[in-house]
Length: 466
Ligand SMILES: Cc1cc2nc3c(=O)[nH]c(=O)nc-3n(C[C@H](O)[C@H](O)[C@H](O)COP(=O)(O)OP(=O)(O)OC[C@H]3O[C@@H](n4cnc5c(N)ncnc54)[C@H](O)[C@@H]3O)c2cc1C
Image 1: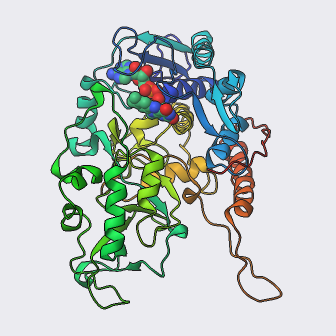
Image 2 (image 1 turned 45 degrees about the vertical axis):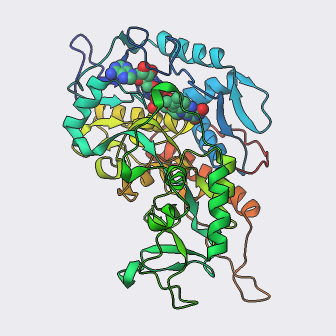
Image 3 (image 1 turned 90 degrees about the horizontal axis):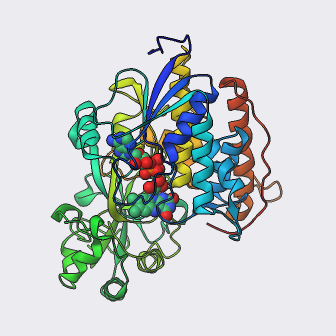
């Protein structure tokens, strides 16, 4: 534990005053710990930020859908229950946006900046941090972490564990995969680790036609990437010719379709992403396609006609750690448990997820400084589901994750008394139950284990689907 020589109050450091860092600093200060918060803007700007304000929203102004049908809605409610600053500031700076929590960009950042600057236990230190300091520290420098600090982080974690851009493939909820069409097997019967979606020639040509005409996101100049052969976007592979995908990531070699006993014309494979086997990513399908077009293309894959895409593929600049290799679910670095990581750098996606992991990292760093054990929220809560995923996901090709319902346990199956068969609940029936279960578990944990003041948040009953 590091301590301020002139005070008995323990001291810790937070690097980065973005969505995660401000929440971490405020959570720790609220726990009674003195915080030194370093922010390099405006001394040194990132390519995406425009202001010197803290918690600047670099693109959209939405913190996600609200209400009991929404996984982000549950995370918002969890954060409201413990009085977290980012969601509180968003509520205060809210603008009408249907069922989403959207804000006035400038007012939101101004509110967060004022909360940080006026807190008596937070000292803001301007300028770039080039090396991770000694003592307890939350590193929350985001997707555009400066080069010097990224190098120092590589020293601590190993260079192969830090990535500089996303090349993510869509991730699909297993419940939406048609396993009468797709089947489990590895090439040449080596394992049953993959789900295989078989194409006939006609199906392949229809799929290829949609892929050829689908539209891509236009990256900022500074985001333009030079693709390595190993992570070429699927649309780029398709540009090389109609057969290139099926001689590449869509090769059917060694995959006997149990229905025909033969190799299909082409195959799309899915690989398990989480320990429970609920999240599956399309192998070799990293893509920068617009989300609407991406959905159309993915749903043309036999077996994925009803695919519920819980995380869309993206290709953009992003600095993040291979969380399952380096982080615990408390967000402590395994290599040095006095260093915690939050936000995009910890392998999350999105403003809300970044702020929530910031809250947990700040809370846990303060606990360490006060001589207490760091904690992980319960599995049923969205924050617990997310941080457990970060610590236990498949490290092979790990990509940042946003919250979704597949991160929390399924409801126990109920039996229909009349028929004796399991009751089948639709998403709309299940989600409110999972929402209430998660919120109750989180509040009980925050009150009883973390010893925090908890208030029951209002729960909007909005029903927009994700
Ligand atoms: C171009 C772009 C567009 C995006 N659009 C969206 C969107 O629309 N919606 C969404 O939910 N998410 C979006 N994201 C992801 C978004 O960045 C995160 O959701 C969120 O801002 C991440 O929070 P963070 O705290 O991890 O990082 P940030 O909010 O970026 O905060 C990191 C802070 O660390 C500072 N910093 C960096 N290096 C140092 C250093 N060495 N020393 C001191 N300070 C340092 C930075 O100046 C910054 O203030 C976008 C990201 C990018 C790059």
